[in-house]
Length: 248
Length: 248
DNA sequence: TCAAAAGTGTTGGCCCTACACCCATGC
DNA sequence: GCATGGGTGTAGGGCCAACACTTTTGA
Image (cartoon, rainbow over all chains, first blue to last red; front, side):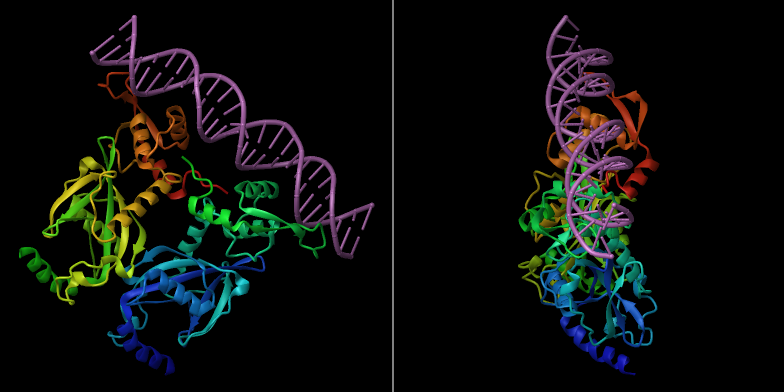
């Protein structure tokens, strides 16, 4: 059984180079075809879907590890990446790797740091690694059953993302450089899972003062050509740092 | 040297019962004398202040560990306790325990999960443990120098707390059961580090609809007696769950 | 009776909602 | 020219800051 061998051979090396009992799981969001997508991989043999993840080198910072793991999967660098929660319940991996020896790396208790990432769908090249036989984008409303507690990691990431909409700008990492207001609105609506009023969204977005209107419009639709915008990077970064609507 | 012995003797036991390389640090906030306070302990011999913390038993959930650690320190149970970030940089403990053997528990690399807690100052009984010779409340603007990266853990906790004010109710765990509006306002002002308008605070708080006005007032001041309030626990919990001002 | 704190009223401005109305485009 | 989607106008309400006024209390 090739998979079993892979795990067993990887085990020794893992014990050597990684922090034990510590893992990273990433919820990678992308936006495509008017849908919010999440990156999932399928484990060989097990035929089980999982969030992309990995371990932290003994000589590596946590954030660097998350970036490395994502780069291996997607080729993308300088991704918007944020830790949002630790998942460390005792029973989170119950029933997995039962067929292996207790000393096997993968069978240990793992405390996993959840990161979520926002990436430009068009810039990503998915990579299948040794332990997986598939790596795909799935719409957030068509996510297959996920292994262990990965479903709840995903849920928590989505909730966090939704909350972020209230006080942080979003879109720079999910949309192409140039985009229209209706496209941006669509992104918001899909993240939130509900319709927003067009005119009000339009003005609210402009009031945030993070957009630059371009002298072009998106031709090709059957109707009036919408104006193109891009983000004012500096103001966007400022808003990311300082928040948008903060009360008090 | 007694301290050294303590550490060395504790080491073996720690390796046995705790998850290696994983720690918990708690930023415990209390409110007293019109000041926001934080719990700090002083390590024996080292004469260095630190945030209260501990480790996670191999048989224990993360949140249970945090609760246990806090209960040992404060005697308080059912504390408002929330993880807010992981601190896992390579160099975070650089220079500590240098005089010990490399195999000693305390000298390892630790990834620390930061929790912050809100507790009723009056209900807490501070406990000095084996490794510390002091455990005290310090005002947030008079915090002594803290060991390792504990200062930045504290900073991040305070920032998180301030952000929470924008979308979560606060006070249930920091104030006594009955309190006045000016007292609640004082709490907000101290957390935020700035003055708020009295009338507007008053009405905004009432609009949140989480307060119950009592038929009593706080006698004794030299001036008009302020009305007493308490939190409507059910509505408070609802607001905690659903947020207060959420946009979109 | 007076100072100071606590409760309440008032005003103008901004944002939000909702809906309506134009404008542009491809058929 | 017509349907449709995109940009803009507008009326009403709520929240907000700022400030003023009134009430209550102990000295």
